[in-house]
Image (cartoon, rainbow, N blue to C red):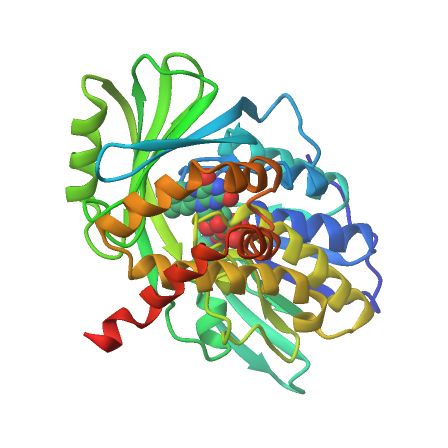
Length: 379
Ligand SMILES: Cc1cc2nc3c(=O)[nH]c(=O)nc-3n(C[C@H](O)[C@H](O)[C@H](O)COP(=O)(O)OP(=O)(O)OC[C@H]3O[C@@H](n4cnc5c(N)ncnc54)[C@H](O)[C@@H]3O)c2cc1C
């Protein structure tokens, strides 16, 4: 779809690098506010390759309404597996989405709002131009055409060139390995596996329907060993497709802005460190960033709420980083308790601060796990 911008010589150009969900949603919001927006995407289509499990809490639908084009499944329960073979179930109201269709849905909305999406266009380098209010963006690819822009937004994923341009180092990250497999599965329940066999993260089995599931693990280094272990656990299945990708670890000190250059989404490490979920925080941050660009307000202040939840997730991750198998066995046992079931069955994972607070009030023993934070130092 081609829609002409109504640009006059006073309209400030916004260039967004990355046609992922966060880049496209930011483009839509800014185009709706009258900005002339161009999105540069290095691939020749939106939504491929898939590097995501596509599991989302219902908070996603406060931002993007559910649409039949991308909805795959609704999940009612999560079964949490401890290393000793015990498990606990928690009620959820989650959804599984198709990332290709979701990204294309958001790209379509951005175009409808007036943004231009330029495929086959990889950002190669950035240089300041003349009076410092403009940046020259060197673009490579079939449609590559160098641009001059007033505002530059890096939504270019975990390997962001824009983030490095404003002075950030490459973030720490997990490597995810995933496969879509054919196997009989309960379509209402997804499974997560913790313990030393899944070091630094966890394993998951997320059903698309009764016969296809997304099975994966993430790890700080080589995820293949943990992936093989998970495949052994689930038994016979037929691999339909392999996927994988990087999950950046949230860094609260990442530099988000330099003059009129911003970063967002995975490029800004806006991913929950507990679950690796980046869609809800990235899209919520897009709302804050669009306000900051349009009203010239402070970006970090605009996304204070998102950052608070990301920080709580990071704190929980730091505790989990020190867990050993007996800790996980005890945690799963605690999750089975009435008090915790009551809280976990009600609260959305996108509000970890609320969950933590309520848990400490109702089950103070959980604070015992805080000692795990200090274990490494004590030994
Ligand atoms: C294995 C795995 C499972 C995951 N599961 C979930 C999940 O279940 N739920 C969830 O919420 N999150 C999940 N995530 C995280 C989620 O996928 C990301 O947080 C989300 O995709 C971030 O969106 P984004 O738009 O910021 O970045 P991306 O989706 O990475 O998009 C970046 C875009 O920028 C383009 N690009 C990059 N560099 C350039 C360049 N130089 N020039 C032009 N274009 C460029 C890329 O091609 C890409 O299209 C998972 C991640 C992985 C790896």
